[in-house]
Image (tube, rainbow, N blue to C red; front, side, top):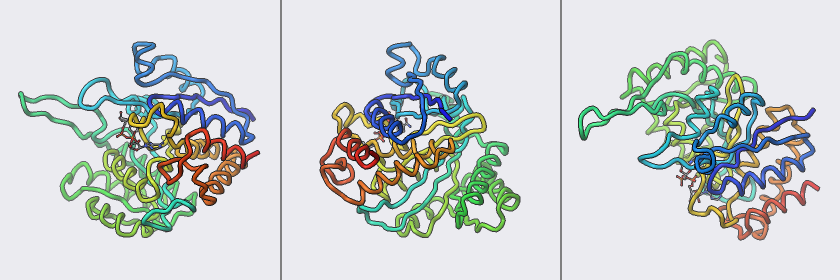
Length: 336
Ligand code: NAD
């Protein structure tokens, strides 16, 4: 069966890593056709909109996208394209598997955590105003419906994949109502969806300390939006950085697969970005589409390249001296 994939190169290192991911996915044996689409700063220049209607229409039609990162201006400028996309398609579950990789040396071993982040509400509702000059308010919007659906997703995921434990990070000691509601929904969904899987509750500051002391004690993490954003990057740091952590934004009407990392303006255009995180996101996409053999083929190739540890085949962020293209070539060679 052939699948049509919306492909959004995005900004910064986006076009470099999406080119690499496309080549590897095409070599995997899956029948894929691509619809290239504009989004981000590049789209704003060309179409006067960071998220042109053509892009939204195509994703609405095909329901699956592979997306490079997009730049969002800090402290001013346009609303995040990512936030707009996640809201437009109700992609309420961000799924970010973080695992130790053979050949990538870090301070930790045996990390195997799936971070599930609520993706549509909380502080990312983008509702801010100046009450009086010098005083601003940002609203954290938390709904029972939003908390229930992400908790249900997490526990159903845990059950269907035989996970060992779900830990909720929260700040319900301070945000008694908002995080209290999140926690209450997690407890209730746990009872109704997967009571046999242990549920652990940790106040997030303690949770972060425990994560950096011994990440191997965690299996799945469930968090609201803002906390999940921070903790995803923290978890990436445990296993080798942002170059090796994939992600999926899942909703009931579609899914967008993208790496956790951003557009990395500091290295954009230099041909040195690590495309692995987006390639891994592509593997998640193939699994989502039921193309398991193709997904396994890519996974075997990158596991092999990483385990072999030849610096001429690894990008700099993971200890090598290769560029994006040489790394991609090494994967393609393993898959030939
Ligand atoms: P970033 O993730 O772009 O970069 C952080 C650091 O990690 C940088 O030093 C960068 O060089 C490095 N890095 C990131 N990806 C890498 C890769 N694939 N290979 C090698 N090194 C890599 O985070 P930032 O600098 O805080 O953000 C830059 C821009 O990206 C901002 O505009 C931000 O809003 C945006 N952003 C977008 C997304 C997204 O589109 N999903 C996610 C996060 C940040």
